[in-house]
Image: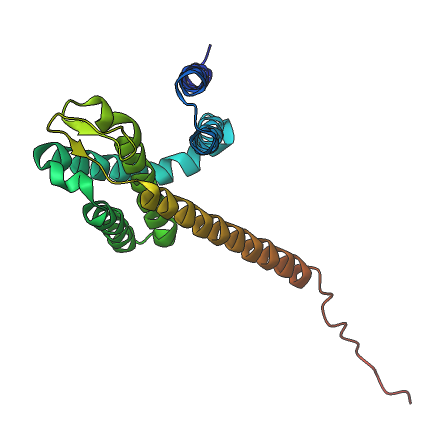
Length: 212
């Protein structure tokens, strides 16, 4: 089995375990719908990342994905060090915006034409990962409870509802999709225009000699 197929099998196994956990532990319909959408997006990402034809594109977007993971890790560490960070959206929105700006600046400096696309990927990735951190990771840490947790008599930090982070992710992914579709449309139109110019017949030059 190749490394690509091994990675695909491992990713599908993780998604299967995640789906089972969601189905057995989640009872609210809205939460189930959100989790189902996230699972579908992760499935699409696993299939795309393990496709042989996506090797070049994967190498191009990998730095943006790593930047999103790094930014989310920094936000999580800050939330653990200063729990009040997780009670509002200000820090998360600053991280989402900042990582996009940094990636866009670095991509533009390196001469890449897809700086906007990479910035959108980094910001969308960080928004999704922060949403998952607030929804799934931090509630498992002692001292943190989710926004909809029943009242508790212990000294616990009630975190913010991460709907803003989820909305940012959906918005950024939508903008990214529109940007990619527009770029493909322009490339195809330019390709058809180039083929049309290549098949234009040249000027037929004729020499007419006067008759005596």
